[in-house]
Picture 1 (cartoon, helix red, strand yellow):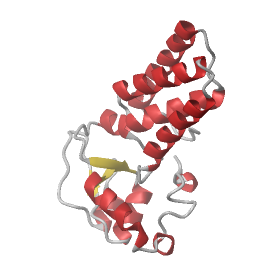
Picture 2 (spheres, helix red, strand yellow; picture 1 turned 30 degrees about the vertical axis):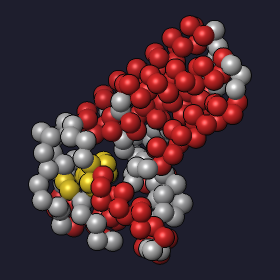
Picture 3 (cartoon, one colour; picture 1 turned 135 degrees about the vertical axis):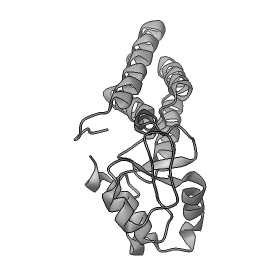
Length: 188
């Protein structure tokens, strides 16, 4: 996960946690993770922000590496990639959202540019507050004025993805290489 912006304290903590889990697994299993595997674990950690999921991924990956089971390694990494790809805006994850102060599990976090794009195509976007609250869905003006993080309800995003076959997402500006493949052009 290329970091072109300053990492938040919450992101740093979860990445440090993941790094320590990998170091312990390498020592315990007498293995070495590749740089690509390490980077994928760190990206997964920042996106999910969940200690249990991080430990499980590292444990499963270590076992597969120790067993020289390349198929299992690929499966674990692909599953992690698929979970990351479910996020509407890969420039911000759950670790940063929790560090921001929004701890409810009902929203996917967004940065302003993705919030504006989703609002433009008619999705309800919320301005999230660092006290863990959010108001009614935001207008374009509210999105432009807000200086924090934004959110889209997980159910709404999942519903949007389910309708993928019915909607030309490429036409509305979503799911192009710019959006669906990780928002890389707007990254940090």
